[in-house]
Image (tube, rainbow, N blue to C red; front, side):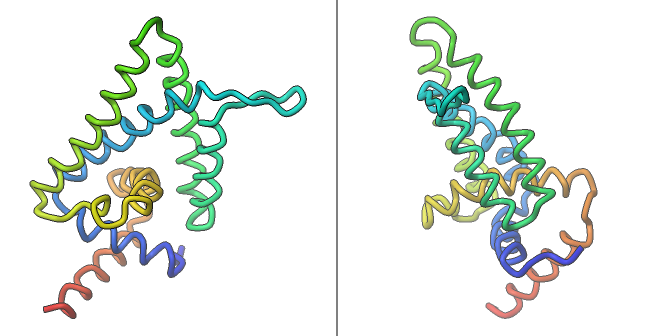
Length: 174
């Protein structure tokens, strides 16, 4: 399967600063953790249209899915399934008594971001979050799914092309 130019540009840009296995590992843990931290309070904002009830976390999840579908349908569908599971967990955590949901949400959010910075310190690369915070937050969950495919050895042709382009960009900048 040939990747679109937009997908290949995003993958190459992201993968270039996520080569160290430790950095990849903390992203694989930290990004879903951040998502759960954000989903907890978003799940409290409920809406309904007729008999259909949903919350703000559902809206955000579907919005991300639609954006990711413009890049790659398979990655987008896997994101949607994983995101729905995280939302179920976040909703349960959000119903805990007292201030526990706020404490858990804060710990997930700030702990997840702290892990990203530790990973990038080890990688010796600047987190995209510092230069482009909106782009980083939109792209990170997508790249977590992409990395799962890479770890599983799926779509190797795509990842070989990404590595080839990273090496080509490095040669051009030297």
